[in-house]
Amino acid sequence: MERPDLSISVQQSPTEAHLTLAGEIDMSTVGRLSTVIGELLNPAPPRVVLDLGAVTFCDSQGLGTLVVLSRRASLAQSVLVLVNVGDFLLRVLEITGLRGALMIQETTA
Image (cartoon, rainbow, N blue to C red; front, top):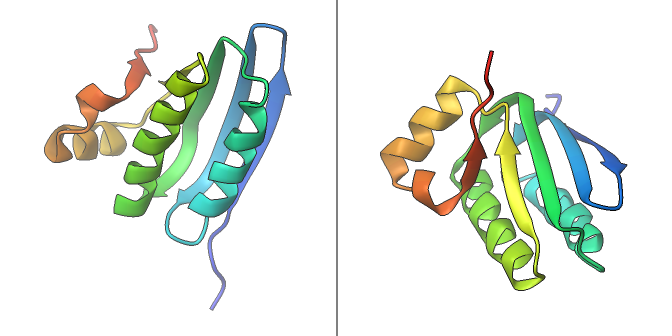
């Protein structure tokens, strides 16, 4: 059985780190996501942007990790911003009550 993976591409500027995620954020991929963001926060840019437009799945471990990473960014004097959050993920965040724990930038069409 092939395990779905998470690809992470990073673009950095002096003011922000932009991560484009594609695939699944779950128990098997959160460790790598945490490692990548942990490295980016040392030293921390003012903003860390997670583009979730190509994320196809996010389980409870993934949700918890996003909240933990948001707190870690705050402690490092940075802000973690989620962009291109899909409807399914927004719904899950609403249902779990985590919507308010994360900074989500609404995309304007």
